[in-house]
Length: 484
Image 1 (cartoon, helix red, strand yellow):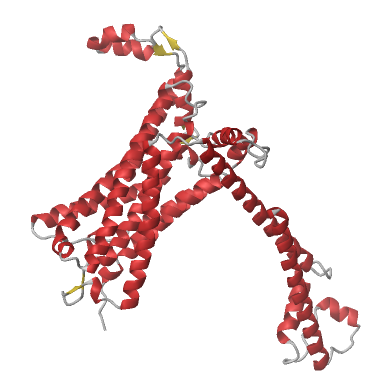
Image 2 (image 1 turned 30 degrees about the vertical axis):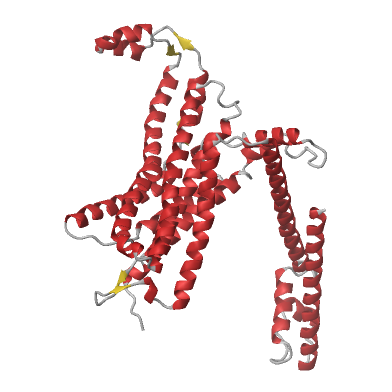
């Protein structure tokens, strides 16, 4: 029997925490589509009115572009309101996932080092843990708050008129820094009031903290993953050249991880272009490219979570050391465990790799869609909307049926509890104890005999079964109605 060590399960916190972060990113985006602000903007488009059976592709493409513009310019603006439903989901899952991932001993998931390399590699792993901590900090550092707002300031700086009159702070800067006095005299500065200038200061500080945490998460951590990946490739090179099964499986995941690192960098730079364009272009919010920056940042955030999941999955194929110090190779593990690990890793690699390739292709084509693609996306959104409404109706129907059951005999929950007691007890334990109202109506009469209790329990069971069948028929009818 193979012995297990702590290193065999070191991947669990990282794997589980990364999946929580992945779920936070994906679920928050779907929850945001149900937020009041998004629904209001979506109703102002023709998304709900357009007849997809008769509309042309050009008309459907125009409607879909308008629906894209219902998203904010950045993911940060989407999750900044922690009091909303989608903001609560994001913070709860991201904080839980980040805390779980920081408990991972990352050094046990990669190849060991000795001598001076051990110190350097240990420093890299410590920095990786510190960067993962930024996930928690990012959740508590939104881009907007009661007394600062990056999006509002961005729109104001891009749209407010310039003034040749120097304000108090600008005059002070010109007098105290003479070498830029000529530039100050020629500058056309924004005409901002003292309140807006103070807002600018608060927003600049808060926004800088927000950006530093996002930079640690989306730039520093992928760079550190690249260093660890290169070290592992160097350490496993003999096994890779020997075509060892575990080394080949690790190499396949390493290729997908490299793809993610490159795509994260590309999407992040693509996002930064549109982010800074918002501060410089007065017509940015109304332009057709408004949604492109949001998509690029969302793709980078999703690939960050996928990268950490792949890092945990890759450790399944790394040799682990048992308690006696001998290495335990992947090939020596039980066949069932190897089959499950290969299947799950292959599913991760195929799904995540496909998304990374699609993200890279969209970035290269500047996120431009053809009319046919936009029309297809509109149909997908409409089908998703119909499914959501069907599920909502089914949920409300089940509540209505339950309420009608509770109040069917006028006794509310007590009546249902009495029915369940009669059904469970049947005739095996004698008659159930009567409730106070029943004793009063009985007028002091004796309770029913055991045989009568059994018949009453059977009748109650049949009644409950009939009601359940009725609920099922009503549920199927509601689904068919919405499908049609």
